[in-house]
Image 1 (cartoon, rainbow, N blue to C red):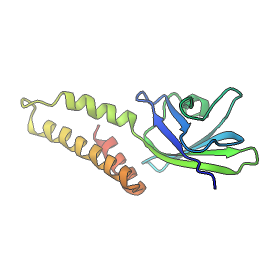
Image 2 (cartoon, rainbow, N blue to C red; image 1 turned 180 degrees about the vertical axis):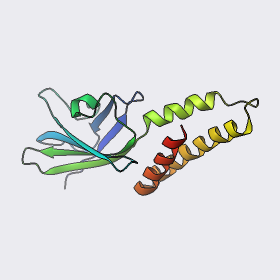
Image 3 (cartoon, rainbow, N blue to C red; image 1 turned 45 degrees about the horizontal axis):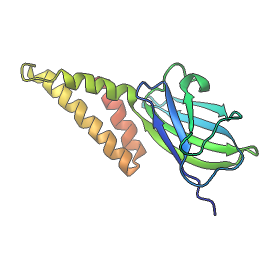
Image 4 (tube, rainbow, N blue to C red; image 1 turned 90 degrees about the horizontal axis):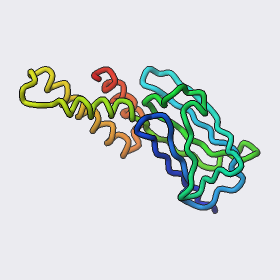
Length: 159
């Protein structure tokens, strides 16, 4: 039995993500189907056709831009399902990833402004943002998608 495994990494500017196969060679991979769920309960989906010369295998991989899928200029923060399919539309492998580049950059910027001179409410807000960011990491480690999306929504409301 084949061991197909893909690794997905979101770019810090949220404009693209990188996908590569880290397991067995994936034969006849023709499309990458991406679907997304967001805290506001909206969804999006798009498809990338693997071009001649694209190489999923490590270390090459493929970089896919949000605009390649019709998602706009950036990938909004949310949960993304990335599926690799063959020419018969059979799903070969899937990865589920949490993308949080947009909100995490805002939390980092706010954290850089943290200092003792801030009033109590501003310090509390920055501390709460960091706690929610830690909760996102923990939910992702455990694969708790509902907790991830709930914490992401709360964090987005605070930044």
